[in-house]
Length: 378
Image (cartoon, rainbow, N blue to C red; front, side, top):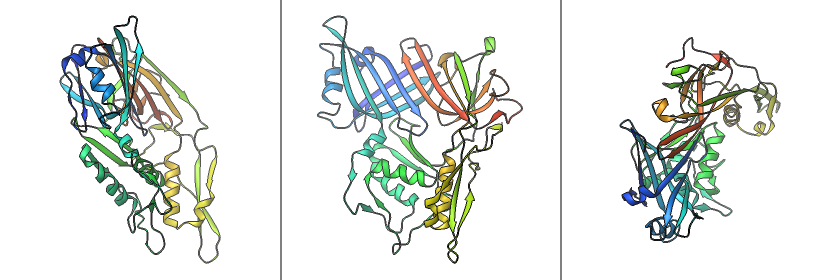
């Protein structure tokens, strides 16, 4: 590996352990995808020989004798460890090599949300949760996965809706992951697993998309010796936004009252100074039959999904950047012009690690042009 970069691979059923040196010597490439809301994924490539122990470690264990083969990848950059992925193997494939003695073993998998799709609650009744708001339901579901080191982080919604059992009882249909994400979408929240901070632990975050906090070191483009990115491109789409409109029905007159819902909140401030107005309305006619509280929650959920007008993509070398760029956080951008300079939200990061090379490709997003800060933090 590169000087200052050390990769640790842990594999095992339920509780993974460090692999022997012979397995690390056969590892040729690692790819890890850390998206904003979707499940994380990983791909490991090994140089495989006929007598390699990888036959037993991955081919026989991955989904065969051991139904849950867990993989943890930890990268240590300049003495600072960071968990890249904590997941399970879903597929193994052998690609023939140049000769009969060597081949390439490709191991792919997803993060621990895959385990949350194992149990299906089907049938006419489903799993009932009487007199429980969405926050309590999510805690009850995540408690089943504590043995995997999953720690819940639940942020209560703006208006907690406690259903009255005589009127409505929430019931679960399908697997745990789909139901938890459905509950998050109804209040404009997101759900994902954030691996770490220690190996074997993951934080199950159920809450709003947070676009505040201390930004990561700035991405510098076209700044000669200070540049730390290989490529960086931005796109602006002024027609991407829409304004949701909910309807609250008056009990006496039965006349629906339209109410527009903005998409700006304390945890989702505009990162651009010139934020274009929505170009179209998105009426939510079905909200007229709900209570005012539930209609407002559905409107806030739709407003939170409003598309960003500025998107960017790029690549960087981690050793030149000096640290590992993380998704779901802010990062500064400098050197691309006043329209796109400033803070951006990192919506996706892809890690590619080979011997002597560690690169990242990333996606950025924000609403509006021009920076809201006079100076971008370095």
